[in-house]
Length: 374
Ligand SMILES: *Cc1c(COP(=O)(O)O)cnc(C)c1O
Image (cartoon, rainbow, N blue to C red; front, side, top):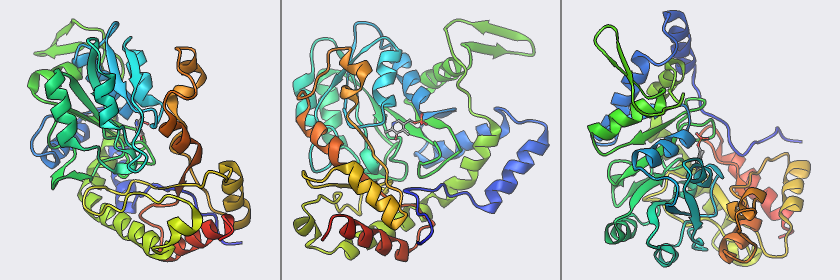
């Protein structure tokens, strides 16, 4: 059988490994000059907006909610189809998650349903750009302005994506990115938050390190409860090395996604009863290539065939959050978000990562056809 093909694999080159070695030998391994340099490079990338780094994308969103002053009694609207972190951070700050169903084509939050879910208690929206396909930013910010809501963009998957020619992160309210191992740019684990001004950035610095402010040689004050969320220089140097490569990484992902569409062919969706992703080559960074299986196909059977007969790993991104036990205990039930439930049962992530070859794509497409008996 052919070599195992995972659904993703991080891209780390020898120069990045050497740079990590240099940091480890330098005598300064936690937050220091590399974190500062990475934040400066990110800020330049996002058109000069303030940026702070953290040790995960999850705490990045939690801190954005804290900076916005969101807590008990407040409602935050988000999508049921995301990594569970997106909703967990709402609970973490003591606020109430409110889900709005998704659009079946984009698989992103349906903005009509967001508007319908707004109550006097609503304080913020957390949209997610699933697979890097951006939520309509014009409409999103029109809704936020009309109802005076904060936005924490969960752009964990959208680094390198665009909206009408503008980079995601270069405009808007809070924008959160993740540098977890599977993301388009990785620091092994990590994240960053794009903020609006210096005051927010200073508050972010406090929240990420025990609420501490230092002054002069020996001054120290603590005036808010912060946590331990700082990025290390070991991690930051990997990001610093990868950021200039991001454009090439995104181009490679585009080429592979395009090859998927070409290989599957125009009639594939009709033949197979499947749904391919939105064929977008302007906005998305092609973080993932996800298909939605036909109603009658059991996803676990399909994934077993892909693995056992073709040695190909697939992923599931994601099961609906509201049907997890912890959310059911908060009153969420089957039937509340039917589109999310249907897509969440049938969605499968096919392999897509920069060091894959066109032949790998063809191998996956053939295996998908064989596994669906078409
Ligand atoms: C990866 C991811 C996160 C969380 O990021 P971590 O760095 O793993 O904490 C949140 N939301 C989405 C949509 C993600 O893909």
